Image (cartoon, rainbow, N blue to C red; front, side, top):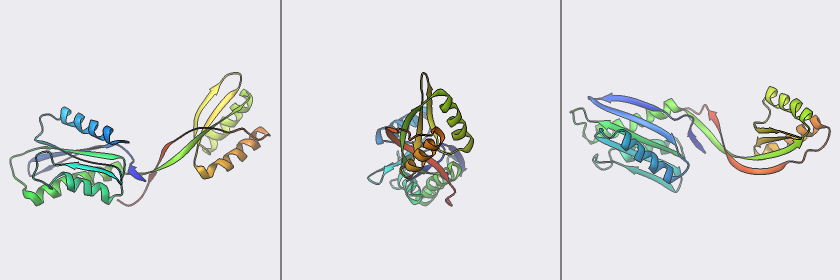
Length: 209
């Protein structure tokens, strides 16, 4: 899955009208709708707050917010689709500058503003990872954490220190066996990895925009 690497705002002035695109990462339709509502409240003085969002293949919506049908929301949504994005919402706020752009001009303005925002945000790959925890002595934990941080081997989610040190690692499915082997070599015994949860992770990509 691809999404935006960063949440951004970008503004363009076209024929005296201001177009402000705000991009946000969203994980549900409720979150997307709440974001759109917040943008309308923040930019209450705007002429239009047009929107588009994609949660997944089945959940994709757009809204022209008073612009001629098909000239705003749909072009915005098409840009997000063309980049293969998911879990992202876009709101383009327009302050009318007095010059009518026509249907073609509006389509280009809304699509172009979203495209510029996506280019600024960059893309990130999203993938599922699993979090595993294991226990060791405080001395072992200090040495092991030094190796993990120093070599940037596996992301450390947390390290809780007490009578024992409990370290949690974030691993891709194919990394678990190698991580267990590495930790075992450091401890001199086989570690007992305990599954905690599954979550999303991101990695910025240089896919050509």
